[in-house]
Length: 111
Image (cartoon, rainbow, N blue to C red; front, top):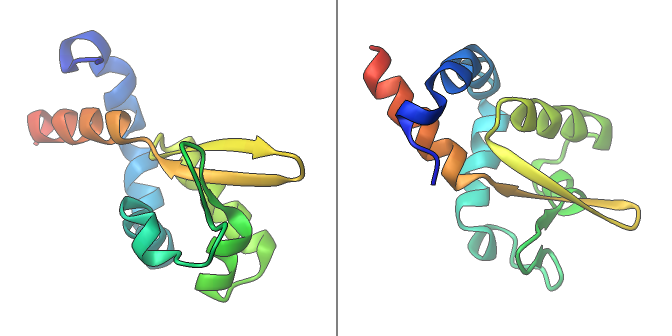
């Protein structure tokens, strides 16, 4: 696992991206849903083992346009909060728990 000492410059530099991504209530809600995807995306086939939740299921749950959801997920990915995996024409997302823990650690040491 990466530690604070190993990655603090990179992780510290990501904090503005993290704050920007989390400032949007829908992006924050999606990140919370992805914490327990089986609970929040109960549709069969919504959660693929180890690769995450298909963007189409995220879009359906938010009720937003596909392009908006894709932009929101790209913002979360740039902030280092989610990882994506492409399967055919579909993109699946899951939280990057290691990165989130590192960012929380950096934030705790920054303030």
